[in-house]
Amino acid sequence: MKVLITGAGGQLGQDLLRVLAPRHECIGWTRQEFDVTDRRLVQERTAWLRPDAIVHAAAYTQVDLAEAHPDDAFMVNAFGACHMAQAAAAIDAKLVYVSTDYVFDGRKGEPYTEHDPTNPLSAYGESKLLGEKFVRAFCSKHFIVRTSWLYGKHGSNFVTKILAQAERRKELTVVDDEVGSPTYTYDLAECIGWLLPTERYGVYHAANRGWCSRAQFAEAIVRLGGWDDVRVVPIRSDQLALPAARPAYSALDDAALRHAGLARMREWQPALKAFVQDDLGYSRRKERDS
Image (cartoon, rainbow, N blue to C red; front, side, top):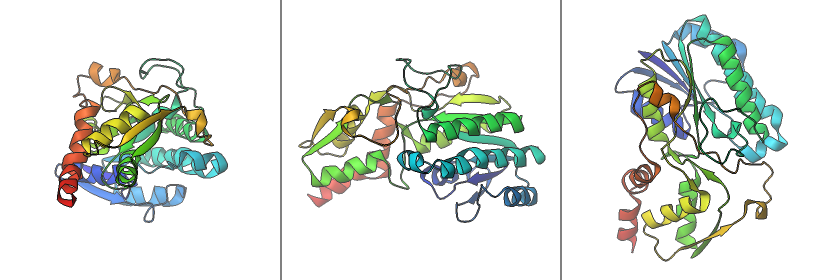
């Protein structure tokens, strides 16, 4: 299968290439190489390439900045998805659109299934939800893959930031009233790889199983990194006064994967251990440096 990956320079895009390349003919286009907001460019380049499937991982992901610049977020996340959906339909290609837990408001108090009503709290969440609607409207062969709290080897993320802070400080303050499902980009890429050969189109929640608070997540990160002397201090999210509202509880239930008989992603703790200790080699590096 010939697979086009947009956003190939990002942390998910690079893991998609790492996972899918051994099985498929993969073409990765970065943000600099392929502007998804340019409708004509999208139509022309995809018609020329004619992939069998497109994994649309390109996104505007700066949640707080999107509050000040919503037009930028909507151009990339919503209208970029619209362009990709129209282009995929024109060449009869499958389309994977990577979406987010931020399409929910977090008030349910238990893990969200694919059938729960959406109600985003931020411009970022609204832009991704509109992208979902465009994908449904214009491309029948679609997989809308919602995920959450992504981290990976290529790029800055919550895990790498916590590890960097643990190197400099003995005490870290982290919010304890946001609960979600941490997700390793390598595992998400594998899940997308399971979906691609199928024709089980629709909405999927794809995150490492289980959930935790941000503070619990940070605690697990510093322990796996070998920083036993670092203390994680829980705080409330309103103490940070961030521009964008976050859902307080956005854990994802993978009901659609189960009902489709597809493989489930592993739990978040072993995935995090694999990333910190195997992919980053962090505990071994700390031992060498001590």
